View 1 (cartoon, helix red, strand yellow):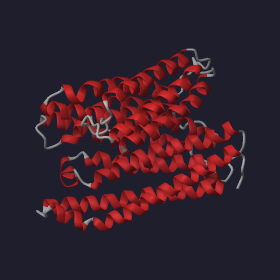
View 2: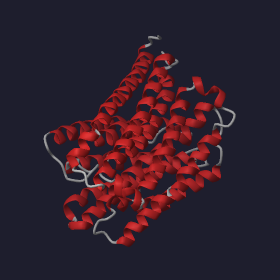
View 3: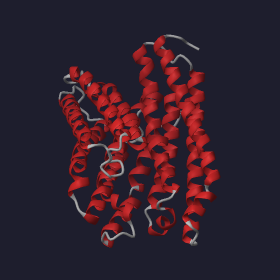
Length: 390
């Protein structure tokens, strides 16, 4: 529930909503068939509620990030296909001739994910043996790398220049980042199954591709930090930009961790430990959720027709979230390494669990910090809508 709730509920819902702001402005025209959006919103949210209830009741298709019951996957795909048509038709009818980089990533994210959900429809129950594991490795990383990643790039490539009122640093870097992501990411999924019966050559391709992801990651980050040249002095009062830049720093750390984690020598002590959980939290929450929150902080006051009701409240939320996710990542990485090396030294599994128990207490408090911080941001947004400055 947690993983699917964050990916399809928190991030994807925010992303789809923000696309309704971004796409018409980049295209210079109203959204095509905008009347479809309310029924799509209702279908999307109702489907998520039903899916969560069914997961609670024990329905599970057996794939990590692919646990949703088949009927819910069908609805998910139907909504995304309809959204794809709506967005592509808006782009086709655009009045702004240049296709800004956010739109490249939007087109790619929607098409790639429509195809990936077809893999999810047929994968868990129609592929026997080790081939099923390989298929799952591809699917799970297509969710992360061909949905969440390009969708996140849609947001930061739009909201960072907009929030600091500066043009994007380099169009050429945008090209390198886009095409290197498209070329390298489709091959990385099998790095989840090193030391398995999957062919060594396939595992090696996944490892090399994982290391080569340094190219798109460092390229896009150079673009983001380059955009901030001359803008740093105003960062303190610019909440959207603060969330975007902190998310970028965490993205650098999380992606470096993910790439080296794919090496056989690093995966041996870290696989099946909380070191992997640290990586996923750094990237999914620390980067893409933070980028989504930045987009909401930019859009919400403009929709409400009023400035943010309480900068102080939202700023406290920012720091609690930042300190929480940063500390959580450090704690999870440390306990994962300790457990991994204890297991390699021949310790019993239960002994390793006892040894890392104190870390979990700290992790709990870091999670509470993130929860309280996010609640403060939501409260500031709600006060903005209700017209109650604080």
